[in-house]
Image (cartoon, rainbow, N blue to C red):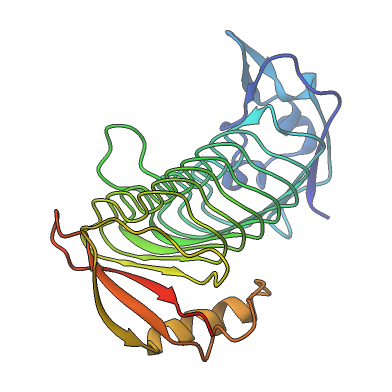
Length: 275
């Protein structure tokens, strides 16, 4: 039986629950979990003040958060082992700096989800806010490993300073996706905003939409038309995970643009050709 944390009522202020970590609570009883101190405004209060706790994560290493957690910040921060399921929306910094395990959200998430994560898999079945998988201000690396899969849309500054890993978004994304990207792969299936790939050094951004043609920066130049083998490998991987893929993307041809020429110019943006 998993450990189930059920929100009693939506708080008037945001709650920070980074102290509730899977590798700790799996060794605790429900009463011990309820006594965990969390941040509420300028006070430290027991988790039981806002959540009813039942079950145990000792056997299946699974923690389930139930309710509208849109004001609950830092769920799964530095998550390393086991599985977290959020049955509803989640607040800022979900899965930030996670190193392993899996987090699934059956709702929307706020800004900075998966920020600077280095491993594991983050699945968002709704929409994501801005700075998904990005570097925090002043940091030089965003996501350095793992996977982020979004079934809905995402906001601005997706994957800023991304170093490794995979981010796939089924819906639209905002401005400056892949800004300062160093390596890794962005796979974007909906429309994209302005300045995609600005300042990228290496890495790959693939744009799959055939109805919204991107306006690329002039510091990217057209290099070739290709059917990249690595792309088919990634797409089949996403297909196995149940990620929604548009028809024909496995056999389509892609325009390859190199850039950003104001940096190393060794990155690429692949744009699916209209058939």
